Length: 402
Ligand SMILES: Cc1cc2nc3c(=O)[nH]c(=O)nc-3n(C[C@H](O)[C@H](O)[C@H](O)COP(=O)(O)OP(=O)(O)OC[C@H]3O[C@@H](n4cnc5c(N)ncnc54)[C@H](O)[C@@H]3O)c2cc1C
Image 1: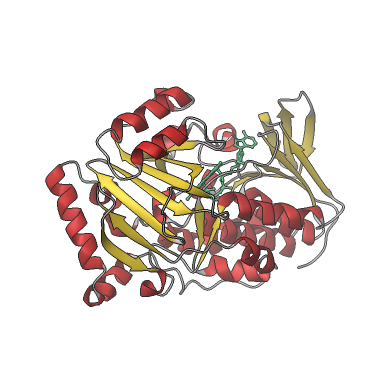
Image 2: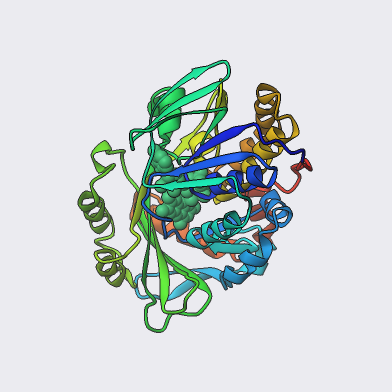
């Protein structure tokens, strides 16, 4: 990477995408400011997968020692009925790390911590601001003038919007969310719970009823686990900021569910890191508008159902920072190359494995029984080639070297 000290880049959002791009920019000697709306690093999130070329990027960024420290012990995934009886079991090695359990699984919060630790020693130029956010922006040929909620107004050469699926940067620079978002038919929720007594170490267990599923997944600490809930239901904009309504929806959708569901629902009331969002896909006609570029879920979300959100964030960050550092005097050229280089990867990564929420969560009891029967088939070696074909495989993507 070449070195420049003239550019000043603002990154909106300190999630995986924002922190990964900030780290690479700083290492290239580029002055970087990160503005994160939350008052401190946001904990939470269950296991995110490092698949395909994102493993290679994590290695090139020197993140693997940190990742290995936090890597989860996930040995496989199993489906259980209402009495906790297992009817389908898939060890991780069955799909060579390309199935539901990836070769590298780490909680979102821990991966973000690995990035924050690297950022702390990456360079003198980092300016990291918690508890602030962009309220307005104006562009001209030379840069972007940003107004912050704190009252400050500052000029930057480039603004990178890495502020998640409901990106404020995208709204301000490209237009309202409805223009770019597609509702994928449901909601998802993740939160930490006490590990149920008798849980099998290292195993991700799932139970489903018509239109909803609840899973319990290993956490970094044996005493806690991550609950994951997926629901198939119509979009309800009133749910966006109403945690009580979100809890109520979850309780209603899982009212008939057995197994450990009552314990999960009771832990939900006091969990420290309740996360709830709609399953949505973001498709942008272009990732750049003048001096504003989008990264991660803000620009290319496929929803947690793809299992590729973190991989897309990391690969996108690596390419964006690499292209900027390659031609710091030609930002327009760098941003155009960023888009050309990542688009083939994103197109593949955004594909939903296995037909999306309708196939995953049938409406009726009969449909749910049939889905359970097909889970049993999936565990048969005979069906392995078919299942491998259904999974998103981005290993053939050629990652540029910067
Ligand atoms: C708390 C949390 C838990 C998650 N858990 C999971 C999970 O368990 N499984 C999974 O598959 N995916 C999860 N996700 C989504 C996953 O992190 C992303 O799909 C993926 O890592 C891409 O990350 P991102 O950085 O683009 O977006 P995000 O991870 O959403 O990060 C965006 C960041 O921007 C900040 N932000 C939002 N608005 C503003 C603003 N206006 N100004 C400044 N900052 C802003 C947010 O606080 C957040 O830190 C979670 C996201 C969050 C925020």
